[in-house]
Length: 617
Image (cartoon, rainbow, N blue to C red):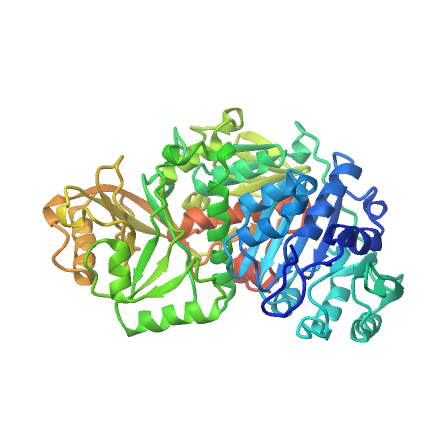
């Protein structure tokens, strides 16, 4: 089958033999496999993902020729992603050669939404698939872990001039080192001149099949040296261990991610069980948190949403939908006023989501999906689910019991010669490791750190918010509801194990009690009645659970390394979107600890890091 792009009227790969073209142009053209020999982590950046053929051929070659301690990071950009069925059909003829990589890709293929989508092709090979415009993506890519080889694919310059610009060539130079190589199927003058102008040595050679020429080349001695990288982690030594403080979603997801990567990690929790705080709710909605125009916050939550839905699909991780109380029901966000309508219109126009995953509905369309009368148009997220956060924490921890310490209150955090020590409330050292991840929500306020002169979190940066959820049982008029509703608060689709709908959640920043309160039920009921009157029977609503969420001053999580203290990481202030935010945070932190390409952009990192709250002296 010859697949042709609708946007560019060009083929995705050679009509002669796409498989052989990939091997000839991109693998041999970059001197692979010899070029990755001896490198602990090798990074390839591809400028047009297409069907994923180049990526899968590189993955197979790496598996066949690398040593067990090596890692491959693949980064690929695609502005017009194909759907899963189109990829499967285009590559069907080569499936025996491309498996198991193709099967894994198709199983883990992300939502077609602009964002960053990390996919573990194998335990040693990770693909960071970036959906969006390369002219937006490349300038936002961090340069601290430079690229070793470039696969300059995409459609021909005559068909796709928007890609082959100075933005591409200048950022290739910025993201490369003196031994970086490139290969491309084209020999167009604009490409040759652009690469040469930014310091690449360019060589013309015979092209594949019907193409007369192609280009290869490399950076030279004028560029920066390749940074030394190591992923050799010695198990059972303090110098290579990571301690995690906190047994909620942030902590248990970090434990799962690190242990899955083969790294040594131990989790400490002050309560007698995991998920003691806000992560202990019996049900939560999985939704993105968006902005009307593209913004680092939208990119973060979009990527987190897509990652979470892929993680949940891993059967070997979670044990199936039933164990996690999952219902794949979608969610409707009601257009309660003109402001909501303008925002939702902005989401659809500006954020680059395929209509398969987000679309606006008329009130009649929304009512048809909901199954109950709705007086509003709505924004529909068909992939949205409900899930038990408490069950998810235990699923993350499954199989790692020997690395979890419950009933252990951490009183202090101190620097040591080899990293960090945690102490109990009397000052006695409990454990030592090279790194510590603080995932203990507001418990971070209780950490005394005698060897750190300034507070870890400046005053006023984090605060708690009390939220109480209610159970709406015996609701005859809600019985036909087939999806979750969001209206400032939320009402879940019916949950059989709970015997009703979850109604939530109250919002009290001034209240630090977790006692169940009738007034909070009334708050939840009134908010629903204001949006959709005459449906909810108040006498069937009872309090279910109250907990304290942690939020930051700018309502964005605090994630990643502390630049003031080597080996100290945060996964905090995930707020009301903790299910998805904590999952993406653990991915970013784990990639950093592994020394791998971190699947995020500079603008997102800047928005996440604690540095944003610390004033320079």
